[in-house]
Image (cartoon, rainbow, N blue to C red; front, side, top):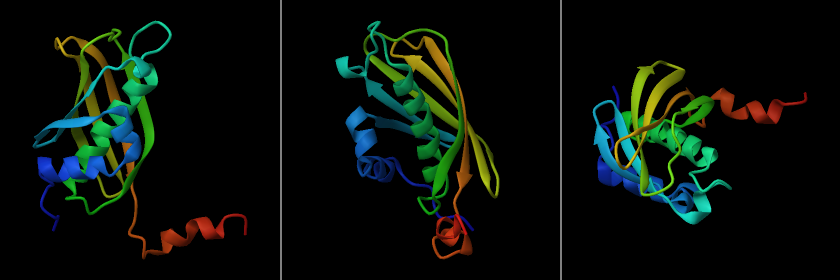
Amino acid sequence: MHAPKLTLRQLRALLHKMPFNRGVGIRIAKVHKDGVTIEIPLREDLLNGSGVLHGGVTATIADVAVGMAIARHFGGTRQATTVELKVNYFRPVSEGKVVARSRLLRVGNHLVIGSVDIRDDRKNFAGFAIATYMLLEAASSKSASYPATLGK
């Protein structure tokens, strides 16, 4: 049996504990049955040399949107890590904010696959991403000792 899904307040508290996400300015705007919506206001330090949102920031937003959806789905009880991320960029974003709506497409025993619609604040499609996450086992399991066995 799964733990109850995290609430919007709980997800925001979890996100706040992550210095990188806090530094980029990510905010969880909404929770959905199948995912979350996050947003980030554009700032000068997030723009590339052409004056538009840096592609790495867009990828970060997609990655975080799926990661937070997974945290919500499992009630914050499962750890996961990104194993693949593909982003298609459709249009540059140069002002306002960028909004990412994630959907968990498949939740398996070991992998989770999510998609992300990325839009500007005028609701224009700015990109699409698909992310695969690997669910990590509990720290007490034998896989937790794997790094200690490297090189032996």
